Image (tube, rainbow, N blue to C red):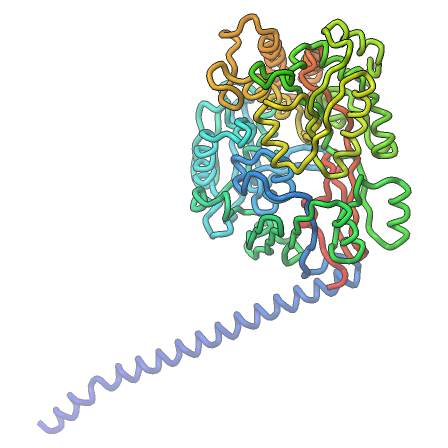
Length: 579
């Protein structure tokens, strides 16, 4: 019996020993795997360091450094890309935090970003194939269901000016759905050539917000762009940091960006020359003489043609304050056009590096063939004075001209102001930063003409369409509640020549947008531009030259053709040779 007791007590010992041995083996295996992982990680770090050292030796990209830049103004409308309206907000701030579904090649052709590709099998159906594995800064997936949530949010919003430029890409959709996690499909009611442009543009339809961030995006944005938002202090700075999970980090070499708000262009430029900023631009732009001098001093200088132009806006609101809406008369609008010597303005402003505008779109637009000039009849001061006389203003008019304050704006708008004064259009020249000027513009009460900048890099339709929409929404004013409250109805005002003319122009614009190819659309745009100019809804003045300057150690600077900006919005694709 005693032997049985011993056997009974000893029986569990074998399994216990086996369990202990298994645990020890598991621990050893885990330690080996951990050591192997550490070795692999170290090897990757060593490889990355070797690659960086090799790149540095070859004069190529190096990792590290904070891009220090300045910007002339504060964020105006907040961080929400679905409601932002200004180029400064989008180009200066929002584009760093949010990526678009589609990008563009050097010729403007569509290329993938958050969407890896897009299919258009029948001119009304668009299937966006989302890039695998992409996530927002909060870790949420950038997939087809997320696109659907963004589009459902966007279709119910207007921008701060009451416009729908940001939702233009889905305005004609009769159905939108996530086919699965990777494919999002939209079907339009009819063919519309510029559809994909809206998914490339900024402002535009293609910027995606993390659904977790919809309620807080105005002040605490979460996107999927090359910079993760760290902080923004009005009047001081925006700070962003490189994000390790960015889908295109092979082209992000810098660790972050410190963007300082400095309204005075001279102060900003002097700070750059003193080495406080890594990139910058001189007040008034880069001339040929200055380019040679800067390059001789060791700076990197890039130049090209800009997508931005300066144009007029006319107060045509019948309910504005008395005396401010004289440009409801088309003869007065034509007089403004005929008084402009556009070549003289660009000679004075840019030493001939800019380009005189040739019609109501960018001079770089494919829709405006070389040699076509809708403004070839200007200047003609004699006819301008005759038109003013016929309109009952032989003794001239007084009013207010709105403009932006930065010198690169005023070197265009001040000469225009002087040319108009020469025929008796005597305007108080009121300039300021974007927020107060835009607020006053959109109220359409106590100003006569505005000379502001706008841009259209990919297609003429978004700006033209939004111009006509703006004229009907807030330049004229709705019948019930005045400016910015809704579209004025031509059926309620059948005798109003302005509304009738806007409807005619919009019809031609719709016809020009319908065909799927640029070749088919070009002659239709000539018809639309002809009528646009006959009415004089607005007049372009000059196209800007583009330029940027970097310290000698800044690599990767390149002017994107037709776009007029340093690639990667002055951050992505850039590196420092001195890190």
